[in-house]
Image 1: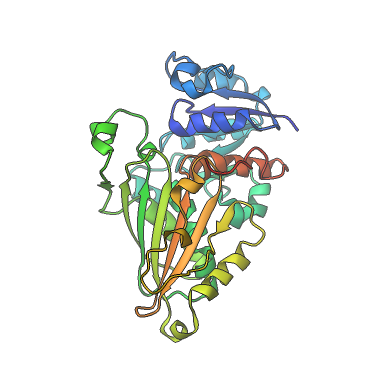
Image 2: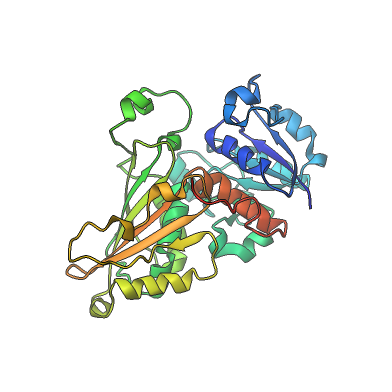
Length: 359
């Protein structure tokens, strides 16, 4: 199968990363990215110099629907919902890397994003694209809502624990989340300039990050009940990556029978057949409170890859499980997971074009 692909919003970090990965995908025949201005593709994405791609405008992409199999939207919230129906009506599948189709309830979308949904009739059919959890639904979908970068990392990090029934969800899930400065987009802002961000941290959206409702919405089915996510976010002084550190209380009657080894066993069994999720099960060799950094996932280990690395530990004195999950926000958190979903939608091995390891 040779796929013909459109990318709406080809000038941003996610659009550029999508093009980079698709250029190395053996099942892709053509890639048509869009831009609003008259930019040269090589100037916007100099890492892809000589790749042969060039931008067209969205109207031109609309005229080429007969030559498209799938369109990716790498656009700000609000744009995909206004255009997705056009491509779907012309038989083109849609993968939305933005947030437009992540909520089934249009009212919930409006509460989180502050604007009414322009295509509420499409929300029921949109499949939430955590491939590892919704593979069968993705395979039959014509519209996939790719998760947010924080969200997919957290969902993969917490799924085994939530499904086990060990967590006491009367207590909020505490989530400390850090992403790279590419997560702030590529529009110039003083705070994310290298001279300002280097050696610093940039907290933001502490009144309630928009991914917290997304997480509450999509973690609840795993837990079998509603739950509260207390999420704090910041940009770290690195370009790309997602670091999630979660604390979940254990139900009092379960606290005495678990330890790190049993939690690692739970996670390894849960993800035994998942290529892109790796559990850091390195044993501890030193004494209590020793600084054994290697027993937890490393952010740099997943940079440039579609892998999610997960690690766990247990604070027995307080009855809290600690979960660490790391991904590359531009790959597993955006373009990579979108391609993984594309592969499944078109009957390809989902690893195609994504098997490379971290840098």
